[in-house]
Image 1 (cartoon, rainbow, N blue to C red):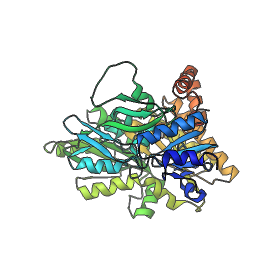
Image 2: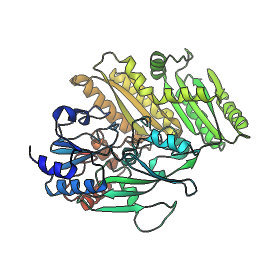
Image 3: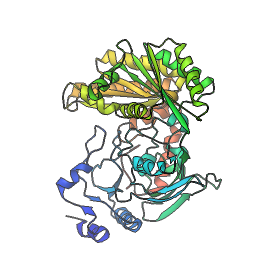
Image 4: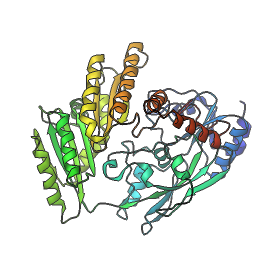
Length: 463
């Protein structure tokens, strides 16, 4: 096989050529199927990453970086003439400084493992995508991942202080660093957050960490309309309370959780609200009651409050497992649940959801809706049959409408899943809608400056 000896010289045993062993690296959590890569590289050192990229750059071989393989838009699958560069062996915490509020971690470290370690000193790293059990530091940076706690803490970009990066020609640089603020020219760190591996390979990350809240409580409220949930969140935030978590789930999702996890819900409820309040030990009871009273003003079907850690953990894991639970209500094992991800201003959420649900009804497809209501993030989970032309045509039409609704309500075609392969056309639609075609041109010029031979994750974000 061409390049075999050269790759073995660079990587030793840390390279896979066997077709069967390469199969897990040809797909990710999206509905896309990749091509068989030339090889799968699993480097152990930064020097190996440098040598590999320099070799690929010289030979015009394309490289797709891979973390946990949890991309929902096809960002981590190989296309034609690709090498997969898995960062799985870069999985260590290098240092933690609670006094300086940072941790230095390698990109292959899984987010749950990072937080397990930080929990020992009563700190945490706030970004928490639903896939945090498998999602990695590098992958979450590359997609600017969000999660349930984004309501209070924002997305990944707020928590990245600096990066060590290997560039496509094999050179390396450090952007940012260990301090919580700096003003020193262009923010190169920000360029790599959300770049989906198109500019270089992250080999080290300097991340901001935060003390865990002193006390938290959870409120569950059920309503007959999403409008009431939207009004409730607006009133709560206007009162000065920022929810730690504010999630909504529709009836389809509740029914799937009932089947998958044995959870029960009021029969009359169309929507469920999960809302967490973080406060001090002295204030938590009062803050929970104040919040619950605002929810009661909108006549919920049922409402409950808990501070029991086990019960809160059960509900939290159920929400994070909502997608996998939907798989239990598929009509066939070949049916897929394809996740749409858009965002609108929170005040626009009720109107946007009504339009989205109307389109699903018009097309005659099943779509489960849930998401992060406090920041207007909607996940539309579309039941579709890959290989069935009519089914996939409807899925594509629905996704396009989903993006259109987001734009018309002042939002974005992607909230936290990135662009990958799936949303390249939607990104172009967004730039046209906002009359910002120049933005794509600038992105292309940035790509050209970093990667003149176009080897890094070619075909993702834009062609």
